[in-house]
Length: 248
Image (cartoon, rainbow, N blue to C red; front, side, top):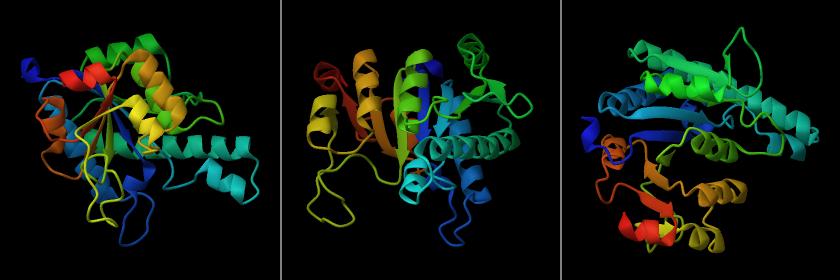
């Protein structure tokens, strides 16, 4: 099955908000966790090696805390701890569907998760384990987008798959503007110039330097993830170098 894949090793990037229960407001919905786990399993069953980075915004955001008077560094560390909580929740869901999983954190807490050691992470991926990278980069002032770009670069991921609630990048918010147009492909420079907010500028720079394409897609579309990793057209928006975009 792996022969049919366009992307054999991917890093899935989720915002923490996707875990929130929209009806009750609970920060981690067990139903959402299990839905995510089943979709990740489908990708692994196709032969794809999957790493995951989760945000922590469903629990706490460092930048938001700073606005409320919390020291930015302290707030960012609080946000990093939130990503570890989310990682443990997703690990539980993945193991319930039969996937071997490891949580690796940039903040040492050996009783909870493994430390982020690159060679060990690569070995886990080669053995078919899903690796969840938590704790961001381990440093304040860096977003989980940047953490995702860093980890994708380190593990030589073929692509970053940014899981969202829309089927790509649009010229405007499609929920507010009926004339919004979806991009099939974008260069990094265009995305930056138009301030399309696919990822933050630091994450973009790292992806540009390492020529890692970013694919924005609707994770809640049942077939979208499979279509993305097998390279089917129209499954999302590809953000890459101009020449790479033209060849995809």
